[in-house]
Length: 331
Image (cartoon, rainbow, N blue to C red; front, side):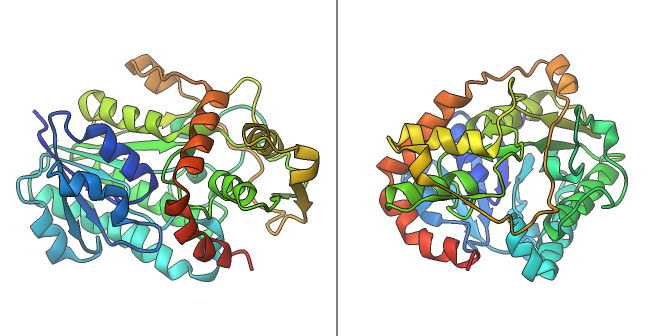
């Protein structure tokens, strides 16, 4: 039985969603987070103050700290990562240190401590872009040749490390598509667009907005992780995606946000030159493997966009104190 779960990056976006999903549900949750710009202890204060979870601030590259944090841990869910493509362009070494060396440290210390399950959170970006069709798990090549940014290259190398450990240890790799939902730092598209409109500013849409992203609701990713803790086969990678039909372009997503906030898309969307014209155009994953295993999430994108927009309307103080820093990377 998996009782005590160590969650790295648990004060970040998807990590926070996962912690709220699992806290009080029979698990002992310990969050390990460095609290960089994207991690907010205030996300978790209600759970920490009520004693529902324990929290430790520290660096996943610090082997001594990680070793101490492993005391009594049955499972690790490893979210901790630098995660923004634009930031990786100016500081690739930081991304390599956190995403590759940090993951190596976590894996090594986890299995020295006898951890029974390690879920490594990867990304669809390890496959790169695909014009047609869908990537399956076996399409991930060894190395980072498919990845197209310092961020995705570091995540691809970390993915390789986790899969290599999975040859001898109980490791499962999850490769999710583009997550959205509550607590997402406003540097990312949806919270940036939502907060812009709430502040009276337009949505800056890159290029013609025809890029395709698979929008996966973060609480569903949390459900998937819980499913894999129990059912994931060691040494395997699993894709998880929404697989929208029809696919959702960035322009469609921006138009949805406008409608949900009672804003006219014709007036509130501003098309700007794409600062990364050669960046991946379309991501798409085959989810047959995890579906056959038994995971079948409820996909309702427009309603999940609405829930997300409502959360940002109701939590203005949360994102307002983060907005200036988030916007600084686009100047």
